Each structure stands twice: as structure tokens, then as C-alpha cells.
Length: 153
Image 1 (cartoon, rainbow, N blue to C red):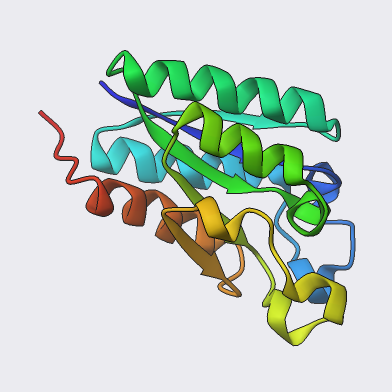
Image 2: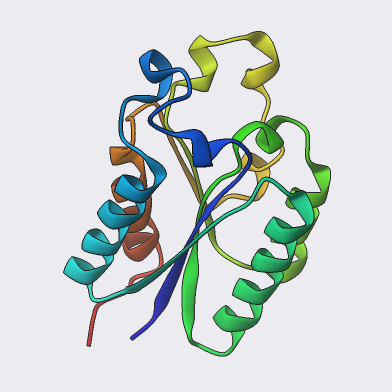
């Protein structure tokens, strides 16, 4: 069974308590459960990782890229949080690891502060899901599977 990595960046561990009008009331544990249920429905194993540290996220992307090349990993659904708008290093990691990434944002970043309108992830993403709340993770997993032609065996 192929795996999908659900990767969450800084402050997403605060889901459910941080700005609920912007991000909703569901916790990161709720999101991870939703992702596991979606993966099970599609015949995909789901692994989840959240980190507030850029290097940990980069290492996870590198590892996922190795898994893609080995035929074990389908790709990554990635909410980079604020690193979306600041991290060239994450963009370089995605390019260098040659890993398919679906960029996900819970809120509509384009309807928020101007600094959130630019993404360093988007140019190297296979697709982008923005503004659908935590359901965006479901759309991201489904979109990754469809884009890559994955069918459970």
C-alpha cells in the first residue's frame, strides 16, 4: 500500500484554539484522523507530521522524495503555514527531492494580509487547495491520487 505524507508546518499544532474564526474549531488530531479516513477510503496509508521547525520539514520532504523513487510514497499534502510565504529552503527541498506536493491552506490566503498572497511552495506544487477549511486536506489527498493516476490494488 502506497503512503501519503500529511505535512503541517508552524503553529498548526494550535488548530482548534488559534484564531478559530479563521481556522475553525477542529484540532490537528481531528485533521489527522480525517486524513487517515480519506486515505483508507482510497487505499492509501497516511502518515502525519507537524513541526514548528523548518529543518524537520525539509528532512521529511527529502525522505518522502526517497520514498517516491522507491515506489513506496505517492506524495505529500503540505500545509507549510507561515513558511509558505518565507521559505525558499522548502521550495528547494521540494524541487530537489522531486516529490509531488499538493499545497493546502485552511483559510483563503488571498483574502487575507498582503504578505500571505505570495507562496514559495506554489511554483513547485503539483496542485493547490485554498480556503476550504480542513476539508482542503481531503481534497488534497484526493487530488494527489487523481493527478498521479493512483488506483488502489
